[in-house]
Image (cartoon, rainbow, N blue to C red; front, top):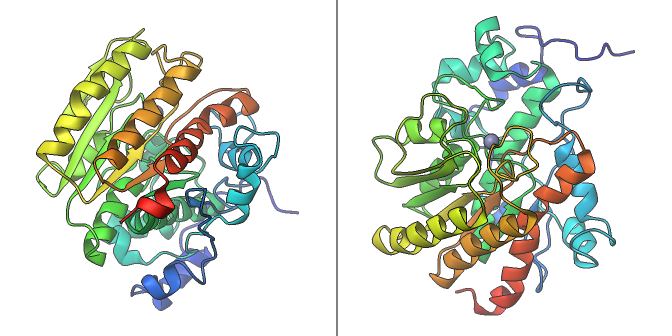
Length: 362
Ligand SMILES: [Zn+2]
């Protein structure tokens, strides 16, 4: 029987062995992007991206990172009695699967190659692992790559169809050369670089509404005008040091729905008009919610839905494709947390219908 959470041994994993055969992008351009990876774009539903290994298994049951939330969310969305009703099962059945072994060059365009290679090769040192805060196992490495791969796919789908959602993503505390705060490789940064390399987007704007400031993303793009970073977060929360994004809106603890919505209304239309991007990546972290264990803000269920709908609809009104990722969310009640994370999907489904995306998108 497999030991629970056997720690990753340097050089022992299949991911390291895969290095020799995976030195180049092994093909995800248009031909295979929407075909062999599955996925059906239904007229009435936005494309979703999911992989059953998003939730690393096994996982320590008492660990403070709620690893089961990705599969819990998938299960909830696929439930006829869930928040998406009959549309959920149809959308989940047609969900796109991210590529299993994304090419190294995607990651090395953002992260320091020695850090990235140490991570996938099982060779991170104790200090680096402690800073990440997650048990370093092969299923963790696997799900980390899949999650980034999923955000890349959602970004490509959004560029094609106008709107897409990944059932994971938002690893914004990952810096170039180290991970922190439960995040290891920065999916928002990697997706930005991949679509730029694809030639389908030259300017990307990242709208980060996770309660924690997007420090990794801010640092990675500090000197890069082609990727704008916007972070809406609680000022009195992790990370202690908050390197400057292009725009930072720090809310005090206890800030509520109206504080958040008025800030978004003040910033987003002006920002998009002044620096029109080719793609928006939206981190819809639910740790702003009043019930969140780590959040410190007081956003209600309705506030989260209004926020998500506002961000998505503002993008679409201005003709900007938007790819959504779930971001952070912490609650010991798995069902409550999955429902909270389903909010952005509800907003996306509503926007897809109201904008009649399949008919109207360019
Ligand atoms: Zn967070």
